[in-house]
Image (spheres, rainbow, N blue to C red):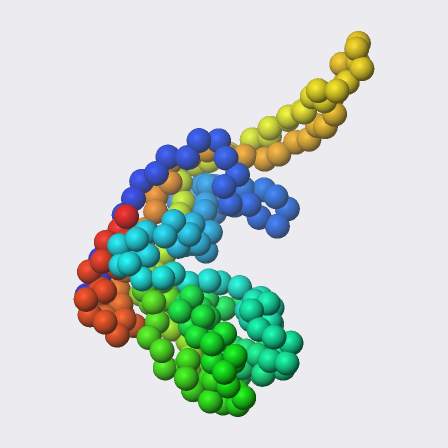
Length: 228
């Protein structure tokens, strides 16, 4: 496998950059101690939203949403809503969070606007080339495996290079419109936080990237975007 391995050290100040279900900073036990952790999903989304791949390639990005049908309905007359619903169901199944390229979403609007058959619309957009965003980050649609894209970028959970204890931050907010002489707080709460120097690791599979991108000239700028 031809690949680029990325090792990065990044120091984070006191933070709760990635929280668990109870609002606590995520952590992992490694090397016999508890360490700070940032999930791969969290950092991958942050990487994608920077737009670096779009900037380097000049290609439109992608949108991840479960509201594609609502978006189409907003762009289409009411008599096309049923067709739009059938197309979304045939492409992604119902109520699914999906990463899709902006050009394909625009094409869906055009094809539904001018068409009358869901199968024809699906056929027209299903073979369109994917943008670098989707080629890098991949896509999984459980009900339609043929539309899955194996992502070329594999990102590990980041963990701190040292043990990291969770501390408590007690904070208050002052009401600017308090009556004279009233010194009470308008709000108070306690939040958990931690700090650490994080070790981050990612692997960019160049063979997979070549496979996902139909235009070879896009490979090099896509790699530059990921590295940035």
